[in-house]
Length: 297
Image 1 (cartoon, rainbow, N blue to C red):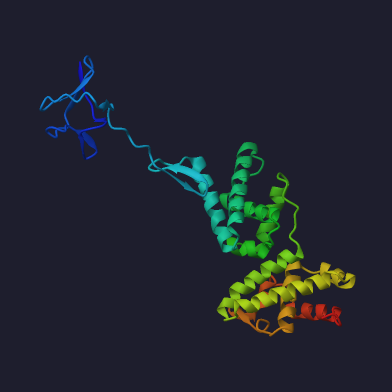
Image 2 (spheres, helix red, strand yellow; image 1 turned 60 degrees about the vertical axis):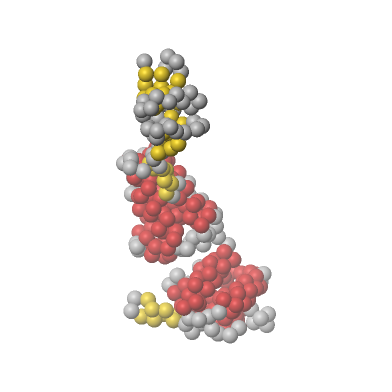
């Protein structure tokens, strides 16, 4: 019995991916299973030194990896995969708006996948993809001691601040949320990074922001070393304290930032008041800190 194959081996030529007879160029090559020979069906040349390959090897479907979720091209996603992709995509969007470092973005996506799997397994609480994304970003930020405020998270998600607290409270009844809190230095460094971003719009050189960072960190260290000042600052929001330190440092240097204003909801507000999470007046706290540190500056 004789069979027709496409084959590969030494000798011969190729024609559009197929082996051909080196004598006449025909692709009709016949394998004689009884004699163990390959013969050209057109000119009769025996090609016994070729290795047979039964049929052309099919290519494996290409796969792509998006946010850690592998899918096959041309294959419809399952309901489970679609949900995972929706959560991961939303987390990517939130962390980009919040200027998370790349590693922290990956951690947030991992937390989202873990949370989703836990909810599927236990069915302890029903959450939408948007809610899972918010909780995952919050968990990742707390585990990494990354200073993220409720206002920032709410703005990134297009929500009101008072909509996030109930969500976290509801989740905390079933899942243990991390207790780690960022230090005051963490808040200060984060606020300085925002000043650097905004400073580019006002033409404030990066070198000056670096001086500001050094001065603000020095002021914070001084303040926390004095019991009276430390007690006063412990009553204040860490975000407000961080921005007040930047205000005071700028005042003691070249006053390049304290007068800058930003447009918010059809009105202009001080940039540093805006960065202080919309809380009490930053200049007022800066004056209080200056008074308490008087004689030490």
